[in-house]
Amino acid sequence: MSDLTIRFFSNCLRRFTSFKMYLPNDVREDLPMLSANGNEYSKKHTRTLFLLHGYTGDAGNWIPEELAEKYNFAIVIPTGENSFWLDGISTGHQFCKFLGEELLGYVRRTFGLAMNKDETYICGMSMGGFGAIHTALYYPEVFGKAVGLSSALIVHEVAGMTEGSGNPIANYAYYRECFGDPAKVLESDNNPETLVKKLKAEGRPIPQILMSCGTEDFLLENNRQFHNFLEAEGVPHIYEEDAGTHDMVFWNKYVQKFIPVIFG
Image (cartoon, rainbow, N blue to C red; front, side, top):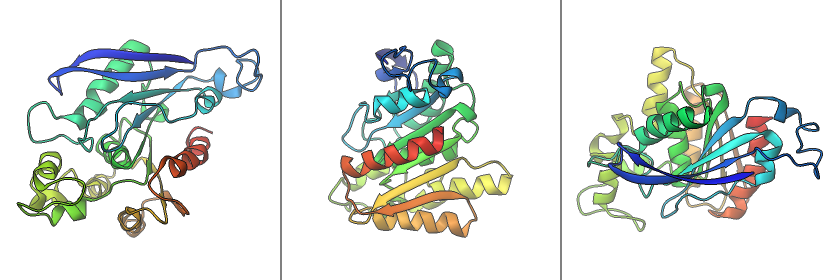
């Protein structure tokens, strides 16, 4: 599997940025199940998974390479800083547009990958889980499937914030930069619930959503709330709870479980 780091200038971010990319282009003669002759997926066009990190994180691969090799998919891993993968209110903070238009276009032009939604998926954990679900709903013609692990679906909490408030993670100014005016966030396109309602009203397809959260995770109720919302709206999706907290042990478990579902 090729391991690439690519640096390019982003007009959305107004600066040079870089992303990591993994390509399953090696021939594994030592492992028949991964070789071109022994793997049915290697005979199909390579699909692409955009992988999003969480708060305080950066671009790093946490998908086992053997899964990417087995199911023949490339992994694109951008750095989204602490943006919630949203278009912030200040110049150089258009992270949603960067992901769903600019980076996507670069990958298409340069590698001939992610050419349609049936071969383009997105996955993230924590803040990245929010980003994966939101971005797929914002660009439903781009992403066919979205996986959110322990997703930071905190728009209702943000909506209740006022000047001088915040939470142990960050202050009011941070959330306002990411989400815009908290008093208006629930009706804005930064709210995944708003996007779902818009897609339904317009009769447009909603990407397949897969979610999981640990029963000891501090974001459990947020995930349950969004799951209940999707059920009330009649949106088919997969939602699972299991023993676990907000850590890589839980996320690795559900990567192993969900990757075969979306690529198999």
